[in-house]
Length: 288
Image (cartoon, rainbow, N blue to C red; front, side, top):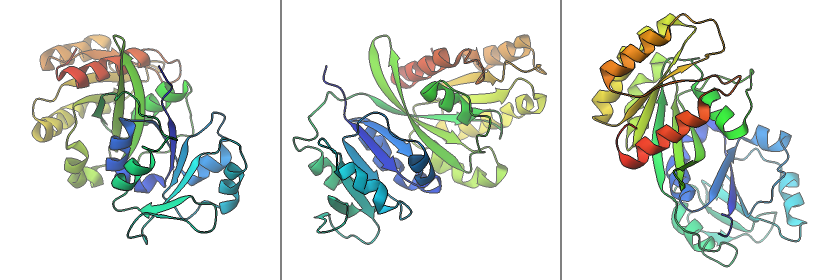
């Protein structure tokens, strides 16, 4: 099978929610990477890119100019709030400038050109990771994508969105993972975060009993907003001294009729199995 095209979206973390619809649509066709301006400048891209979409003003043009010098350079596209329609750029590093408010029709047209060969569509499913702050939801995604634990990882503010490719029983799936911040001040916004989700996981910290007690509130909130959406239960930080026994966690999972996984973002224990189960639940509409 021809490799899927690689698209890089450079966007401020705080603007991810604004571009969620673009991410979900693009992920069904291409391999989509998202990096903040700071990350993209400090982490060199080792693999080739087919297109770079920039949705921030903070990226220096010198960084983009170096991409123009390659023989097989990527398409450079600016998502601009000032643009009312897509147009070819007459100067600067850009190939195209398209409206940030309605980018998808123009991107579809651009990426149907020979640069972007048609690829078999891959199922895309929106999934949720919910639970108290600092239980390690973002670290689960980071370890799954990069096979590494970042002890300096910042706390999620509101919501982070990640694209996670998963293979389930020989079927490729793309999970658009909405990593929901646990702070109470975002509770009023979470109805927007939950909308359209195919599956979810409630995550708690095995070394923090309070995070386990708070699961009931999260369960009730998700059931209120998502109805009978399949859910998984995850006990994270299995590498630390535990305050919650496996028996307690499994008993709660049985009471709720949901699978239970124990994971560690330091050792990687249980993380691939958890993401495969989450993808299976999202595809089938039932908990595995």
